[in-house]
Length: 184
Image 1 (tube, rainbow, N blue to C red):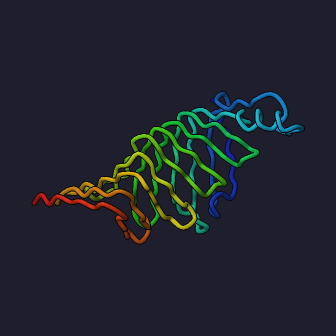
Image 2 (image 1 turned 120 degrees about the horizontal axis):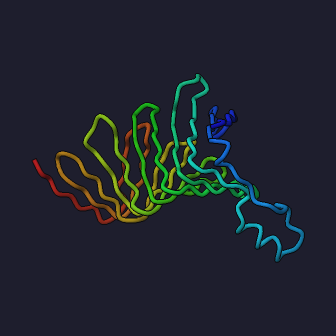
Image 3 (image 1 turned 180 degrees about the horizontal axis):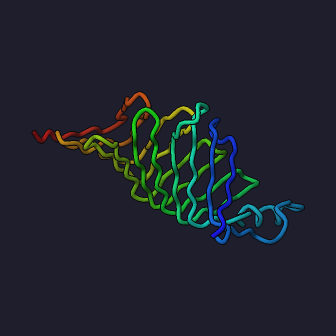
């Protein structure tokens, strides 16, 4: 198996992308739109597919910051967008988190939306957050949701309609209809 390596700046960080050569395919046809009708069709057609991908992001100092794994990625070059199928994200900066979801959308290399049963676990802790959708700003390391969010820990469970959080500072603001159960 041949492995392709691509090193580039993504999210303001040095990123290494590894994929198998056999798993990269492109779509035929031009990505340029010449009329309104052809532009609408082009927006729906991926410019490329990546199978069994792992994307590594490094800090400017060269330490690993995150790793994204996905069995399938569709790339839309004109919109600077990638659709991720069943992504698993390991975020290892100051605190180590693992995020899993049924699907994800990466827009302009800085905004990640995870959907379909999103689970966020913090390593070396028994805490976990669940929701149907989370929006993540990869530059500012913030996490938001307007959906029902459940936070589970050894001491109990808290449910809220919405959340704002900072992953590096470990600050969580529950925005609406907060309910908690303490379980010693």
